[in-house]
Image 1 (cartoon, one colour):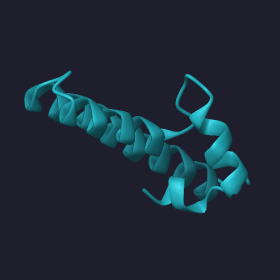
Image 2 (cartoon, one colour):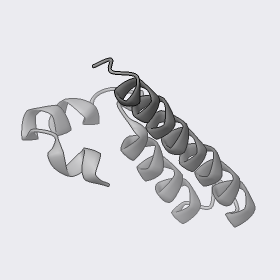
Image 3 (tube, helix red, strand yellow):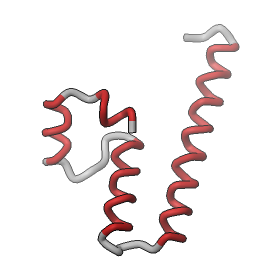
Image 4 (cartoon, one colour):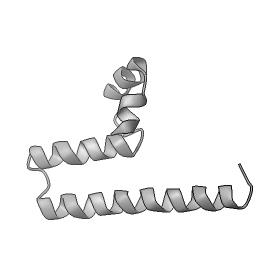
Amino acid sequence: MCGSANRSWLERIASIFTAEPQDISDLEDIIKRSIQRQLIDSDTKDMLQGVLDLSKVRAREITGATLTNGHH
């Protein structure tokens, strides 16, 4: 949720008019709204959230490896 909070008001307004998510936080919001609107069930939500969580872990591993190897 930090991604949405850190965006400027202009970015948030612009995102309303775009059809595609801009970051993982946007995807999480879409998943949340989809479950509320009963477009997906809880098993599907859990699976999608697991994929997003895995991508976050993977990104941290890559970033950590880059920093450990002295690259910026």
